[in-house]
Image 1: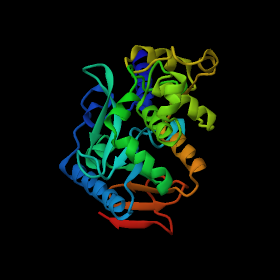
Image 2 (image 1 turned 30 degrees about the horizontal axis):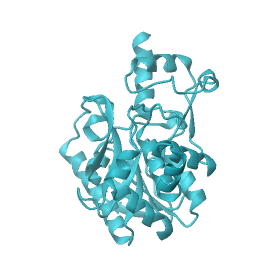
Image 3 (image 1 turned 90 degrees about the horizontal axis):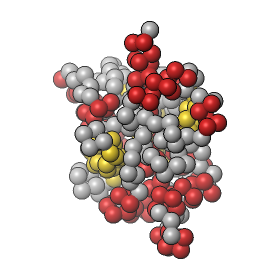
Image 4 (image 1 turned 120 degrees about the vertical axis):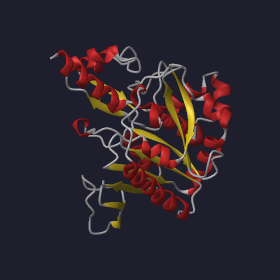
Length: 302
């Protein structure tokens, strides 16, 4: 029974963990076969070609990880794909947890590496959001400004970080705070109020109606067991949320909802792959489970 509970707690941790590639869960994931790696590299090439042909300088990108269906989630990890990233064109700038140093860091990773972080190489999803110029231009400046990006990096990491606290930070929280500084939480305001860049970003996000995802854990034993995992914490969450067995966390779907409300002109493209095909699905409605193509979807056979 204890082994079952521990496995369930680990699944909960993995659900909310923002790890980069081989650092997922602070242990080496099962190595993908050559054919699986080939499929993922070809999947990344399709996404990169779409980005290159978009005429945009950046995109918000998210990928699937473990099966999050029990939480009503498809995506766990988001970052900023930048055409002019010095690492390589369209590399993803993201926050990840450095397991050895036990602290969050910023990391630029090529699209292929970003997608190789998925748990199931046989079935995966990626979401791309393209922004109108008035939103994309200031975000590109902020994203490529190393000092500005690092100023928003929290000192301590928690995969389930409470979205309205400065105590911890997860990968998606760093991204949404970067959006805030690019779109409204200006340096001038920081100087006037003597608040930190992160505090200013949170104030702006709250004023603009940002809503983090309320994740219903649904079982108190999972919340208790999560305390045994070094990158999960509960001490930053309000008592009423803990009593209700929920976490308010920044996740890709909460970021996309905020972007869609603020910039209705934004376009979303969802990509998925299984063993037979790649599907390109345009629009805000999700592609069908199992990567089943709809009538309007583009299908690329493997």
